[in-house]
Length: 241
Ligand code: NAP
Image (tube, rainbow, N blue to C red; front, side, top):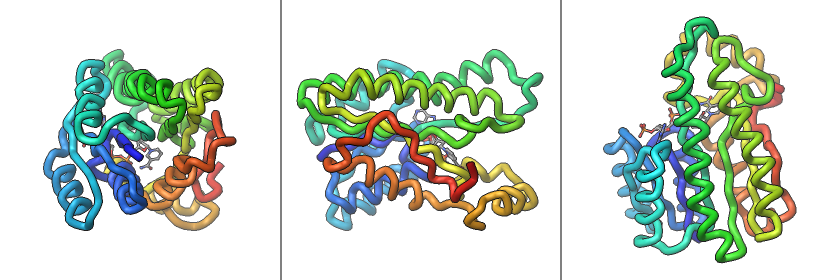
């Protein structure tokens, strides 16, 4: 099985790549700027006996996304599993969000998913099999103050997932998303200690999530036997919502 994981040099994407590779998937680790981390992850996975390649591409740009899929084809063959994990966040008052903040958010969080789904489906429809897993966010369901454009972009990913799932189900392709809660990654490094403690207290299980918590859910949805689960939003949020 061949998997592409976008934005996979660090954080949640790196953990998803590691778990998939350890579970026997050939993994394409996509990165945009974190070249050293991506190459080091790739080296680690290959020296442990896995099969991994790192490919640089800004997946919000159609030509670069196409390059990523070409690289996957030449290294491993057709793509069975796409994990749309790449994303950005930004904290700002709604009234301060600029047009370019909004465009950047939607390019990285939504257009990237649109681009990669279209490319993956070329293989998947032909094979009459595929798994697409989009990493959304609990904020796309319940909304976050000072993250209106982020929350809106993640709600769009949920909408895309549900609609695409209906369209591709007859072709043996499932499309699901995961809505993580607060996860310990560089994305949250801007939050101070007090904010992180508040978020921990608001999380019923009493801890911040780990990238591994999310990766476990990806592995479950990616399984061939998860074929009756599609168009779903799986919360991995410690009971937050
Ligand atoms: P992260 O550590 O900041 O990693 C995100 C990665 O996405 C970065 O390494 C970045 O690549 C990549 N990326 C962004 N835009 C890209 C683009 N246009 N093309 C290719 N790669 C791109 O964040 P994370 O926490 O692991 O987040 C992973 C996903 O989980 C995101 O979609 C995020 O919204 C979602 N999520 C996170 C949390 C959380 O609490 N951490 C909660 C809910 C949902 P480079 O570094 O190579 O530039």
